Image 1 (spheres, helix red, strand yellow):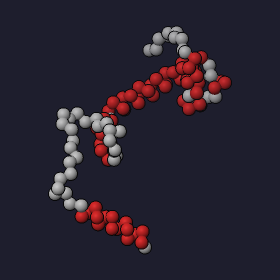
Image 2: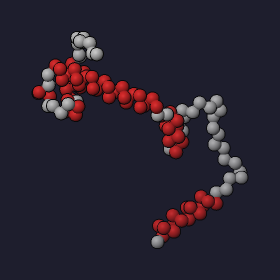
Image 3: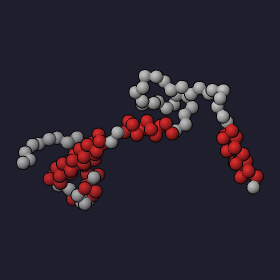
Length: 114
């Protein structure tokens, strides 16, 4: 069961709690009581706890790394989050075939001419 404990709430936290009163309790700010502030604090803390638990279950690092692999980068603006010890090499070899690139460029040239 809950224990009655008094805590002092900083003004910015109180303002935040009051700003959430419409969403959480459906009450306007001017109708809030001290008991309503307690209820707001409890419910918002519970929401934050649930959000933290959900966030810990999602592998954000792997998802972010995967997404960043699809983003073209120029230079060192994007930092890889991978834990591999060797750096990826992007060496162009003489055996690279650029025929596909040329054909793709030709398709765009044909579209512009039409």
